[in-house]
Length: 309
Image: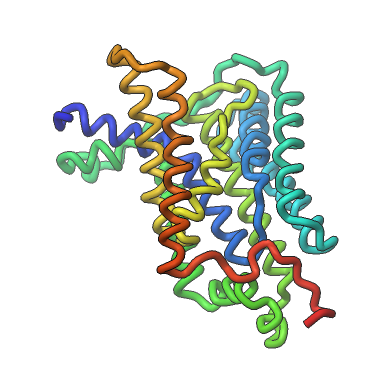
């Protein structure tokens, strides 16, 4: 691929990977605290429709972003209540959340189907940095949400691995009984991290309806929430690795579009399958890799009851 074609391709890969990055980093936070949330797809859909609806009503995309984050956070709060307070099965609760979010988003967005976004996000050129050869057009001519996604991923990595708060979060996911013994409120940590995960998923959904598409249509996420969950495993629960993984998946999606527009005789159905085929391949490879490196948090998916310690 020539440089003149490679630069716009890589720029498109970053854009396509941004909603997955938002959701994956949020899921990393939730899983690091010990909560498995398979409701990411539903939370993204609710975030997408809430962000779109409020933007249409107010004419301001930042108001829509706040609404999307609130919608995703509320969905996550439901999951936290079921899994942390009621000690419910985390897999079942997450799946129910995805089904619920799919239905709610379809119902709320029915009258907005096919409408264009009132105030879509547009590329924001960073002075001086955008003039850097090759790197400038790829990284510094993106919309502001792309920059925010990278900053948040770096910030959450710093929080998890360079602060006492991060140690508290990881201890709740690795050994909640020990964390409880030293005075850490495991329930509070898990509630907070699960809600953060929902807020991030809602933000990822809003990126789709306010920047990437930008419009609303039913099932807008098209499985990106599930890719985000798989990406957490690929990244070994590390926000920094999630950045690379998200852009890898985004690159596959961008490649599919490029092949279609280039007129290459490949079935459109096969091209649509590419991101999900990569997801399966990644899961197979990472399963082998986990035998050699640190795997999932030890208490992931396990309800904690302090009366049993």
